[in-house]
Length: 362
Image 1 (cartoon, rainbow, N blue to C red):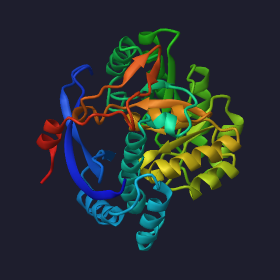
Image 2: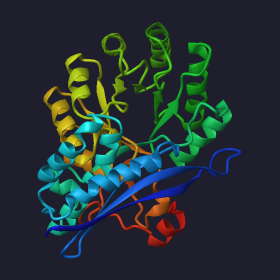
Image 3: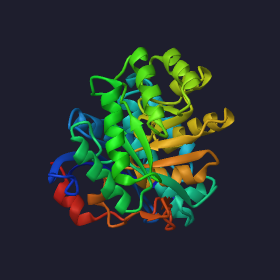
């Protein structure tokens, strides 16, 4: 069960937002898709997603070069493979490009390992549960009018989601932010949880004023109110506000999470699979959070995060952002507000090869 070859490709996929008021198919996403092939015929896949094409070919090249170092290694020895890649990429530094380049390869290794052993990934990694609570966050942007925002939230609720996340932070006052939340509340009713993501838009004073106003308006989560580098500010907000403060998606690798946890700067840790560097470090970060009693949420890539969050005791919420739907035949299943972990071996995902060919960037 040795790795025979590794391939890497770039895919440019469409973003379909037809359900947004006045919307249509707009924009594109870029995927770096890695495939790991073993000598007994197993193919493992891994991918990262970017919203812009900036440096995407450079990332693919870095992934390709690192991937060739996996040839000849045992597919079930993921930690050994990981160590070889980290040593080889050491000159690139511990964050940024290296984490992203390692990520799709690491995911592919775990997918292949699950397929080799005939087990779905969530069970291979611990199997704490087979589903995880989900929230919808696509097409709930600053650019929408309150009416459009409300209609988009209504669409998500009609699909079975009972939690939605809005992007805030671009209004001139807390009252403007509250007005957007209230427009959604009126549209979705009292039983849907409304979460907000400020995308690091505020300074600490603004975040305190907005946070207090928004928690009075009934939000259930405040994400990235200030810069992830302002640990003292995050910690103060988490201590003073009643609403949970969530952050972490902008952190690369394991070490920044240690500093964030030690500063008691978050109530909920958000881990970005690509920036973490793949499944292997993701699980280590989640274990560090568990030891401190901190629940964990995933940032985008729900096809993989549904497995990781189902595998661990402190798995909290999975963000449903359907950026990779066009390249898969497999569709995630939502049941009673939870995404179900696929039961097929590995990630349980079947690529749409015709779509991959159509979206491949040459």
